[in-house]
Amino acid sequence: MRALAIALFAALLAAGPHTAAAQDPLGLSSIYSAGVFQLDVIAMGKPVLDTGQDAGEASGAEQDPAVQQALSYDPSPEVEQRTRQKLFDSLITSTSDPAVQAQIEKTVASDAVWQQFHQVLSKAGYSTTNLADVAAAYYIIAWEVVNGPDAAVHAAGVQAVRADVAAAYAADPRLKDLTDADKQEAASIMAYMATIAAASANQLRSTGNQAGLETLQDEVHKAVLGQGLDLAQLQLTEQGFAAR
Image (tube, rainbow, N blue to C red):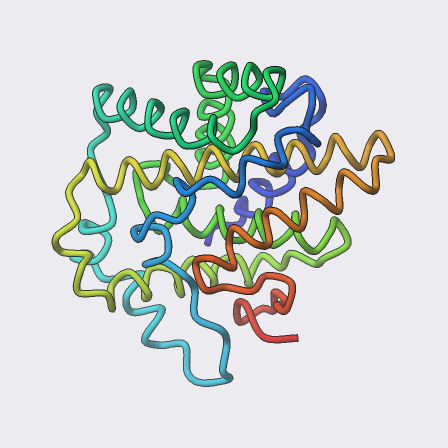
């Protein structure tokens, strides 16, 4: 990806307590068990692991105009409203704590989470209306949350993951049947999860809440594991994700 791509992760992962994430990130750790994070459209973009083989196929998918057109969508305010309601309805069932439910309502109702995600993706040369761009950011941010801030994020690796995600979508025959609404829904949900998880992890680290951080890491790990990717067993190399 572009040279500024690395700024995306630095910006999201350095989000402080002022971010829309949560005043109670430990309480919000329960949300990752919600079924809304297991959409098929998200799992379709699961990046393949580096096997040491030629990356030409992945690069070709990333550069194919037809693939890029299929991955892009025109956003709709109506779809966004329906998606946020679906997100809220799913997340609210993950906890019976009124304080956490109020925090869920606050983060979903506000535009702040999505605005932050859009701003940092745009600055990094990504587009929030491209499913592969959003999914690549989602998987790498979740990987960093699970593995900790010392996990190296290589600029070349970011580009490789983006190419692998595009190739995964391109290889799935369901891509051609996805509507703009399908793509927007998945992108919006991934943006929410990545932004909340990153800011919560940062807040828990800054306050020295190791127990809360470990709970968050476990919940994010299980959420992505449900999509078939074990982030705890991966490293990010210059060729993309690879088994440790």
